[in-house]
Image: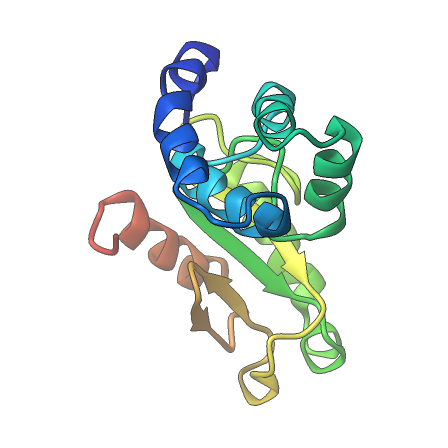
Length: 164
């Protein structure tokens, strides 16, 4: 993830992107997407820079960042794990799956591991009810997860870099 010095160092790249847009203020969401791809997250300092660059209130940028769940103000892990909490998954044990992930990763839902490898979150439904309970890692679904060892094996493939 980027520290404050790295964020400031990368402002010129973001500025070039913004400067090449025809309609700057109208592209706030697109600019935020680009910035999050570039920096990994959208800290206050970066939001203020974007606001100044677009000549809009910082509160407007903050409002968009906090409204859309895609955007994050905290550094995220290399891999994002989402546990489905939809009805089918919940009935089939998603809360146990989530608790096991929290135990194995040594974090709570909404947090990132100390090594910045994993971030853990939950979703309402991913539409894979027949595989319940389901977790997704970077968009790949893993289902019918009931045993701690199954979960450990999946996490280990990411830890060992077998899946990028």
